[in-house]
Image 1 (cartoon, rainbow, N blue to C red):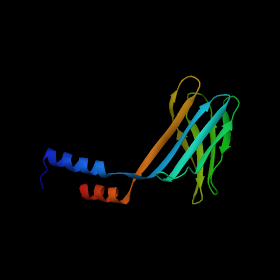
Image 2: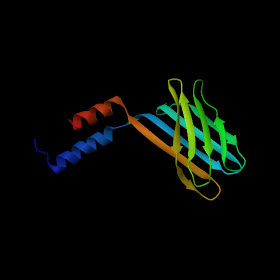
Image 3: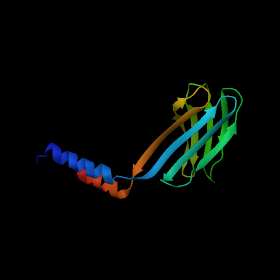
Image 4: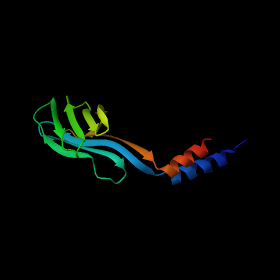
Length: 134
């Protein structure tokens, strides 16, 4: 079967326009050395409340602490130096804790931002992706 470039572009555009994220896993935060670390974990459906979210007062670096989570979830962190990411150890009721490197995104010399996000398509978008690539 032969496809023209325009057919492939149209099919790809149709898939991309109908693809929507249904699931999300993200760890994001901000921090100021000598002041605080704030972290939030989104793990579930897009639009759900965070499973963990909170702020911990810190002194100088290195710093570590625990963030408030929903029952059965856990989040602890360590931050060694200003230019490093935050090591965030996240546990769920169904999985052993795992340590994620939450990379630095930006800083203004005072406030540092960290984060990553993985989005997962809903069932309909996944089905279209499989059909398109079959």
